[in-house]
Length: 277
Image (cartoon, rainbow, N blue to C red; front, side, top):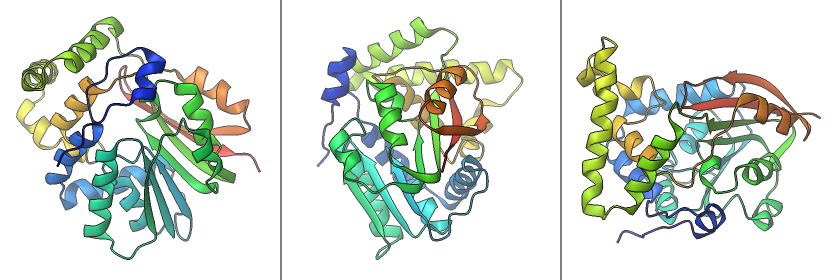
Protein backbone atom coordinates (compact mmCIF):
# COMPACT_ATOMS: atom_id res chain seq x y z
CA UNK A 1 0.00 0.00 0.00
CA UNK A 2 1.31 3.47 -0.88
CA UNK A 3 1.22 5.92 2.00
CA UNK A 4 0.34 9.45 0.96
CA UNK A 5 2.43 12.12 2.60
CA UNK A 6 1.92 15.81 3.05
CA UNK A 7 4.35 17.77 5.18
CA UNK A 8 1.65 19.63 7.11
CA UNK A 9 4.08 21.50 9.35
CA UNK A 10 6.13 22.74 6.40
CA UNK A 11 3.04 23.66 4.40
CA UNK A 12 1.60 25.54 7.36
CA UNK A 13 4.80 27.54 7.84
CA UNK A 14 5.21 28.43 4.18
CA UNK A 15 1.62 28.61 3.02
CA UNK A 16 2.34 26.17 0.19
CA UNK A 17 -0.06 23.51 -1.05
CA UNK A 18 1.94 20.27 -1.04
CA UNK A 19 0.66 17.12 -2.70
CA UNK A 20 3.97 15.43 -3.47
CA UNK A 21 5.76 12.60 -1.68
CA UNK A 22 9.53 12.53 -2.13
CA UNK A 23 9.38 8.96 -0.87
CA UNK A 24 7.13 7.82 -3.69
CA UNK A 25 9.63 9.27 -6.14
CA UNK A 26 12.50 7.54 -4.30
CA UNK A 27 10.67 4.24 -4.52
CA UNK A 28 10.61 4.59 -8.32
CA UNK A 29 14.32 5.42 -8.23
CA UNK A 30 15.23 2.33 -6.21
CA UNK A 31 13.51 0.14 -8.80
CA UNK A 32 16.26 1.11 -11.24
CA UNK A 33 19.20 1.13 -8.83
CA UNK A 34 22.32 -0.58 -10.18
CA UNK A 35 25.98 -0.85 -9.23
CA UNK A 36 26.99 2.00 -11.56
CA UNK A 37 24.65 4.38 -9.73
CA UNK A 38 25.78 3.09 -6.35
CA UNK A 39 29.45 3.61 -7.26
CA UNK A 40 28.69 7.15 -8.46
CA UNK A 41 26.80 7.92 -5.25
CA UNK A 42 29.62 6.55 -3.11
CA UNK A 43 32.22 8.62 -4.99
CA UNK A 44 30.11 11.74 -4.55
CA UNK A 45 29.77 11.11 -0.81
CA UNK A 46 33.53 10.78 -0.52
CA UNK A 47 33.89 14.05 -2.47
CA UNK A 48 31.28 15.79 -0.31
CA UNK A 49 33.40 15.09 2.76
CA UNK A 50 36.68 16.01 1.03
CA UNK A 51 38.01 12.47 1.38
CA UNK A 52 37.52 12.32 5.15
CA UNK A 53 37.89 8.92 6.79
CA UNK A 54 34.56 7.25 7.56
CA UNK A 55 36.10 4.21 9.27
CA UNK A 56 34.66 3.55 12.70
CA UNK A 57 32.63 6.77 12.80
CA UNK A 58 28.94 7.47 13.36
CA UNK A 59 27.04 9.01 10.46
CA UNK A 60 23.70 10.85 10.61
CA UNK A 61 21.75 11.27 7.37
CA UNK A 62 19.15 14.05 7.73
CA UNK A 63 16.45 13.60 5.12
CA UNK A 64 17.72 10.22 3.99
CA UNK A 65 15.30 9.77 1.07
CA UNK A 66 16.00 6.45 -0.62
CA UNK A 67 18.62 5.54 1.99
CA UNK A 68 21.26 5.23 -0.72
CA UNK A 69 23.76 7.58 0.91
CA UNK A 70 23.25 6.01 4.31
CA UNK A 71 24.19 2.71 2.72
CA UNK A 72 27.17 4.33 0.98
CA UNK A 73 28.40 5.61 4.36
CA UNK A 74 28.43 2.01 5.59
CA UNK A 75 30.26 0.95 2.44
CA UNK A 76 32.88 3.61 3.23
CA UNK A 77 33.41 2.13 6.69
CA UNK A 78 31.03 4.01 9.00
CA UNK A 79 30.52 2.06 12.22
CA UNK A 80 26.88 3.07 12.55
CA UNK A 81 24.32 5.06 10.60
CA UNK A 82 21.18 6.90 11.63
CA UNK A 83 18.76 7.81 8.83
CA UNK A 84 16.06 10.39 9.56
CA UNK A 85 13.19 11.35 7.26
CA UNK A 86 9.77 12.91 7.76
CA UNK A 87 8.14 11.12 4.80
CA UNK A 88 6.91 7.62 5.69
CA UNK A 89 7.46 6.53 2.09
CA UNK A 90 11.12 7.57 2.35
CA UNK A 91 11.45 5.73 5.64
CA UNK A 92 10.04 2.63 3.94
CA UNK A 93 12.58 3.01 1.10
CA UNK A 94 15.53 3.14 3.50
CA UNK A 95 14.19 0.22 5.49
CA UNK A 96 13.79 -1.81 2.31
CA UNK A 97 17.32 -0.98 1.16
CA UNK A 98 18.75 -1.82 4.58
CA UNK A 99 16.97 -5.19 4.65
CA UNK A 100 18.12 -6.04 1.13
CA UNK A 101 21.72 -4.81 1.25
CA UNK A 102 22.95 -4.71 4.84
CA UNK A 103 20.96 -7.05 7.08
CA UNK A 104 22.45 -7.08 10.55
CA UNK A 105 24.31 -3.77 10.13
CA UNK A 106 24.16 -0.98 12.72
CA UNK A 107 21.81 1.12 10.58
CA UNK A 108 18.80 2.71 12.26
CA UNK A 109 15.99 4.34 10.26
CA UNK A 110 13.57 6.66 12.05
CA UNK A 111 10.70 8.84 10.97
CA UNK A 112 10.96 12.42 12.20
CA UNK A 113 11.33 16.04 11.16
CA UNK A 114 14.54 18.00 11.64
CA UNK A 115 12.29 20.87 12.72
CA UNK A 116 11.39 18.89 15.86
CA UNK A 117 13.78 20.19 18.49
CA UNK A 118 12.81 17.40 20.91
CA UNK A 119 14.00 14.83 18.35
CA UNK A 120 17.28 16.69 17.82
CA UNK A 121 17.92 16.96 21.55
CA UNK A 122 17.29 13.22 21.99
CA UNK A 123 20.14 12.31 19.62
CA UNK A 124 23.85 11.99 20.35
CA UNK A 125 25.92 14.26 18.07
CA UNK A 126 27.98 12.44 15.45
CA UNK A 127 31.36 13.08 13.78
CA UNK A 128 29.74 12.98 10.31
CA UNK A 129 26.41 14.61 9.47
CA UNK A 130 24.94 14.78 5.99
CA UNK A 131 21.90 16.54 4.55
CA UNK A 132 21.74 16.77 0.78
CA UNK A 133 18.95 18.74 -0.91
CA UNK A 134 16.56 18.50 2.04
CA UNK A 135 16.55 21.43 4.44
CA UNK A 136 15.25 23.93 1.89
CA UNK A 137 12.06 21.84 1.64
CA UNK A 138 11.16 21.96 5.35
CA UNK A 139 9.34 25.30 5.25
CA UNK A 140 11.80 26.79 7.75
CA UNK A 141 15.27 26.60 6.20
CA UNK A 142 17.32 28.35 8.85
CA UNK A 143 15.75 26.51 11.77
CA UNK A 144 16.39 23.28 9.90
CA UNK A 145 20.05 24.25 9.36
CA UNK A 146 20.47 25.20 13.02
CA UNK A 147 18.96 21.92 14.21
CA UNK A 148 21.17 19.95 11.81
CA UNK A 149 24.27 21.73 13.10
CA UNK A 150 23.28 20.69 16.62
CA UNK A 151 23.80 17.07 15.57
CA UNK A 152 27.51 17.60 14.80
CA UNK A 153 30.05 16.52 17.40
CA UNK A 154 33.02 18.70 18.38
CA UNK A 155 35.54 18.80 15.52
CA UNK A 156 32.97 16.91 13.41
CA UNK A 157 32.06 17.50 9.79
CA UNK A 158 28.71 18.42 8.32
CA UNK A 159 27.87 18.45 4.62
CA UNK A 160 24.87 20.55 3.60
CA UNK A 161 23.57 20.86 0.05
CA UNK A 162 21.16 23.75 -0.44
CA UNK A 163 19.44 25.25 -3.45
CA UNK A 164 20.82 28.34 -5.09
CA UNK A 165 18.21 30.58 -6.69
CA UNK A 166 17.33 29.66 -10.30
CA UNK A 167 17.53 32.26 -13.03
CA UNK A 168 13.76 32.67 -13.23
CA UNK A 169 12.51 32.18 -9.68
CA UNK A 170 8.91 33.24 -10.30
CA UNK A 171 8.55 30.92 -13.31
CA UNK A 172 10.11 27.94 -11.53
CA UNK A 173 7.97 28.42 -8.45
CA UNK A 174 4.88 28.68 -10.65
CA UNK A 175 5.77 25.33 -12.23
CA UNK A 176 6.16 23.78 -8.79
CA UNK A 177 2.81 25.09 -7.57
CA UNK A 178 1.10 23.96 -10.76
CA UNK A 179 2.51 20.44 -10.39
CA UNK A 180 1.31 20.16 -6.80
CA UNK A 181 -2.18 21.40 -7.68
CA UNK A 182 -2.68 19.22 -10.75
CA UNK A 183 -4.63 15.95 -10.46
CA UNK A 184 -2.19 13.07 -10.17
CA UNK A 185 -3.20 11.77 -13.61
CA UNK A 186 -2.02 15.00 -15.27
CA UNK A 187 1.31 15.38 -13.50
CA UNK A 188 3.27 13.06 -15.84
CA UNK A 189 2.42 15.42 -18.73
CA UNK A 190 4.00 18.36 -16.91
CA UNK A 191 7.04 16.22 -16.04
CA UNK A 192 7.41 15.31 -19.72
CA UNK A 193 7.06 18.93 -20.88
CA UNK A 194 9.50 20.25 -18.29
CA UNK A 195 12.00 17.47 -19.00
CA UNK A 196 11.72 18.08 -22.76
CA UNK A 197 12.55 21.74 -22.15
CA UNK A 198 15.66 20.74 -20.21
CA UNK A 199 16.73 18.30 -22.93
CA UNK A 200 16.19 20.94 -25.62
CA UNK A 201 18.73 23.04 -23.72
CA UNK A 202 21.17 20.12 -23.82
CA UNK A 203 20.71 19.88 -27.59
CA UNK A 204 21.18 23.63 -28.07
CA UNK A 205 24.51 23.36 -26.23
CA UNK A 206 25.60 20.66 -28.69
CA UNK A 207 24.89 17.68 -26.46
CA UNK A 208 23.01 14.48 -27.14
CA UNK A 209 19.73 14.42 -25.14
CA UNK A 210 19.41 10.63 -25.28
CA UNK A 211 22.96 10.13 -24.04
CA UNK A 212 22.37 12.80 -21.39
CA UNK A 213 19.45 10.83 -19.93
CA UNK A 214 21.20 7.47 -20.29
CA UNK A 215 24.41 8.57 -18.57
CA UNK A 216 22.89 11.08 -16.16
CA UNK A 217 23.66 9.00 -13.09
CA UNK A 218 27.38 8.89 -13.83
CA UNK A 219 27.77 12.63 -13.28
CA UNK A 220 24.94 13.37 -10.83
CA UNK A 221 25.51 11.37 -7.64
CA UNK A 222 23.99 8.27 -9.18
CA UNK A 223 20.64 9.97 -9.65
CA UNK A 224 18.07 9.60 -12.44
CA UNK A 225 17.17 12.36 -14.90
CA UNK A 226 13.41 11.81 -14.79
CA UNK A 227 13.33 11.24 -11.03
CA UNK A 228 15.24 14.51 -10.56
CA UNK A 229 12.76 16.35 -12.81
CA UNK A 230 9.84 15.06 -10.75
CA UNK A 231 11.70 15.83 -7.52
CA UNK A 232 12.26 19.44 -8.64
CA UNK A 233 8.66 20.00 -9.72
CA UNK A 234 7.14 18.37 -6.66
CA UNK A 235 9.51 19.92 -4.16
CA UNK A 236 7.50 22.36 -2.10
CA UNK A 237 8.01 24.23 0.17
CA UNK A 238 11.21 25.54 -1.38
CA UNK A 239 13.69 28.18 -0.25
CA UNK A 240 16.98 29.37 -1.72
CA UNK A 241 20.19 30.62 -0.20
CA UNK A 242 23.60 31.92 -1.23
CA UNK A 243 27.10 31.19 -0.02
CA UNK A 244 27.51 34.45 1.89
CA UNK A 245 24.25 33.87 3.78
CA UNK A 246 25.18 30.31 4.70
CA UNK A 247 28.73 31.26 5.64
CA UNK A 248 27.62 34.04 7.98
CA UNK A 249 25.00 31.85 9.63
CA UNK A 250 27.26 28.88 10.38
CA UNK A 251 30.31 30.90 11.41
CA UNK A 252 28.18 32.65 14.03
CA UNK A 253 27.42 29.19 15.44
CA UNK A 254 30.99 27.98 15.78
CA UNK A 255 31.53 26.33 12.40
CA UNK A 256 34.17 26.90 9.75
CA UNK A 257 33.44 26.44 6.04
CA UNK A 258 36.16 24.11 4.77
CA UNK A 259 34.87 23.33 1.27
CA UNK A 260 32.33 24.78 -1.14
CA UNK A 261 31.21 22.94 -4.27
CA UNK A 262 29.20 25.65 -6.05
CA UNK A 263 26.27 24.81 -8.31
CA UNK A 264 24.78 26.57 -11.30
CA UNK A 265 21.64 28.64 -10.65
CA UNK A 266 18.86 26.37 -9.45
CA UNK A 267 21.24 23.61 -8.37
CA UNK A 268 22.40 22.47 -4.95
CA UNK A 269 25.64 24.02 -3.75
CA UNK A 270 27.50 21.85 -1.24
CA UNK A 271 29.03 23.25 1.94
CA UNK A 272 31.38 21.18 4.07
CA UNK A 273 31.50 22.57 7.59
CA UNK A 274 33.63 21.73 10.60
CA UNK A 275 32.52 22.38 14.15
CA UNK A 276 35.29 24.10 16.06
CA UNK A 277 36.58 21.95 18.91
